[in-house]
Length: 279
Image (cartoon, rainbow, N blue to C red; front, side):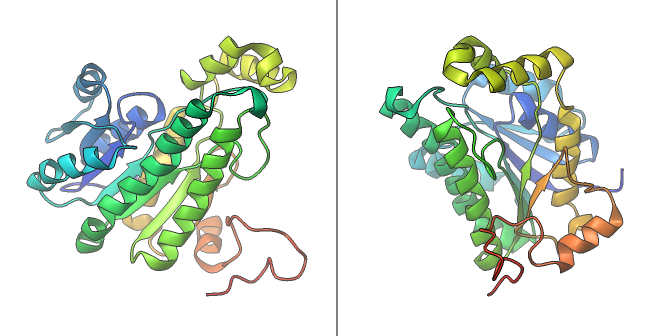
């Protein structure tokens, strides 16, 4: 474990469940102070009780609501400097053919996954610039390839990547997106409840198999987050990195992330300009 977060204070949205909760545990193991941000007070309390170390905080917030962030700002600032933000809050949203879905459910998914990430970064940017901190956002299924019948989720996750690239280019901080892999969280239970007709037989069968096998370990995604929040990741920014498929622990790959301006980016391959990223 080469990353150390002593005296660093890191906000994790969606920190009471799933991968976000695992991220909090890993940060705390490295000596960091975690702000567990989520909707439910009971779940926040349980997540805090599971953390090692001290100085952790809970924050009840609806990440998609600007007023919630306005109210939370003074409380977060009262605890001292902010050194990192992880935007793990997300929902799967409606499953099925687009024309059969509820517009309200589509809008809610975009609000939580994309607007929630955007508001967290908007809040955090001036604070992270002041502290020299970093941010990590969450992409996922549909971020780089089609995920039929999960239209709001896929669209929001692709948009998060482009938002991350924009902030990296203009925001004065280092920020990266991760694809956590097929982690068997409660989110995938929604696919199993929806059934093969709504989710598509192939994806339903894949989900059933992955969940039965235990899925990809959430600790892997959490360790990638910790790497990207640490000084070990200096010079890596504006990238989409897969916890499951990229060799992100390899020093040669890390060097490529720093030097190759086309690697791990969201781009249209046109055989003319995709190799060259222009400022």
